[in-house]
Image 1 (cartoon, rainbow over the protein chains, first blue to last red):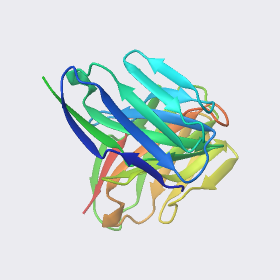
Image 2 (image 1 turned 90 degrees about the vertical axis):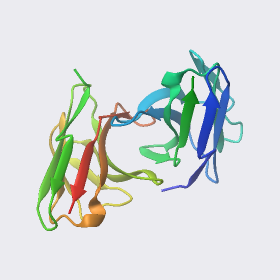
Image 3 (image 1 turned 90 degrees about the horizontal axis):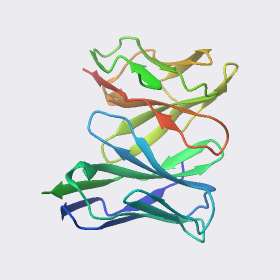
Image 4 (image 1 turned 180 degrees about the vertical axis):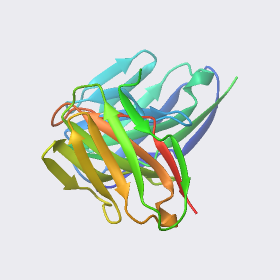
Length: 109
Length: 112
């Protein structure tokens, strides 16, 4: 599979802070997806991006599909304790879903 | 009820044993996938199926086999389990080409 570079690997923040994470690739993708995984559960889709330059929000989450189609970022505003988890980016070309290695987010009250 | 159900949720077994992990879905999706998750490596594709008659190998298919018994059911088998197959296994479904995949809650498999 194609390698996705996701950063940062982990973040430790205080409740109320904003969070930003990103994903880059050497290959072009047609779709960028962001998932969240809680302990003991499967990844849950947060945001799907289908067009280069697209900016999409889902509540406090905002994600963008990079113009070059080789990158994407996810922002979380005003973090809360339930935002804790591992966030994965994934690039989709046809059927093949290529995952980043995840960003582990810890939020302290 | 979950849209994508995996059984069992946890399994501990011994080296050399045959193991089957099962996945069923109520989403009505044609496409189903099996992934493996190891710490620090993200998810990697083992096998995928676009319909009952279509089975394809993914990135890491060696040591695994699959069966698509029906549109709603896709099972993963380890014919002779080995310790480095200890991992989290996820089933996923999608509607069509280019659409997001939806995951089950996983099976934690430990091979001693």
